Every structure is written in structure tokens, then in C-alpha cells.
Image (cartoon, rainbow, N blue to C red; front, side, top):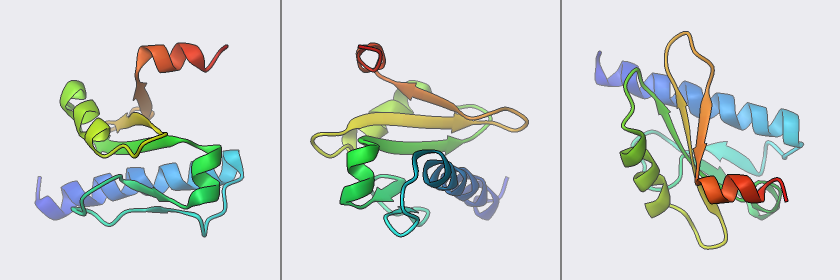
Length: 110
């Protein structure tokens, strides 16, 4: 697959997530956006208000074969203090999945 196609797949997943956050969490579309491809840092850029409502640092991977451990490690490196690392993974003809730390996941239900 060409580099441009790979980046387009990643961008599609990032944009899908931004739209889902705006729609389902009521975030302002002016306060959350998809980071340009190949830029360092989090894949989803959030302003203060969005970060309060969704305290996650997101790494998106739209690939057929994802090294989940490596992707999560990348997400952790880009995670600002006070937020939790999260990886959104997707492959062709499958719905997106989210990978988070198990202890954090359990705490969500306290």
C-alpha cells in the first residue's frame, strides 16, 4: 500500500473519532480536531473544555495488523499529565476498538 493511502486510512479514523466525540459527548467541534498526519504527539488535539470531558490521550491505528503493545507504548509517550493513554484500532470491514489500561477501565465503573 502506498504511503499516501496509509496516511489517508489513518486520517479517516481520526476524523471518525472526532465526529463521534462531538456527536456523542457534545464536545465543541472548535475545541477538538484531528492532528495532521506525521505530526508528533497525540492524534486528537483537544482544548481545555474537551479535555475536561474526555481526559484521554488518543493514538489511532487504522491497519490490518497492529502491534497493540507498541501502539500503546506510543500513546503513553504522548500522554500529557492528568490524562489516560488510549489506542483506537481499526481494520477493514471491522468496527473500531479501544485499548486502555485494565485498571483504568475498571475504575470507570466505580
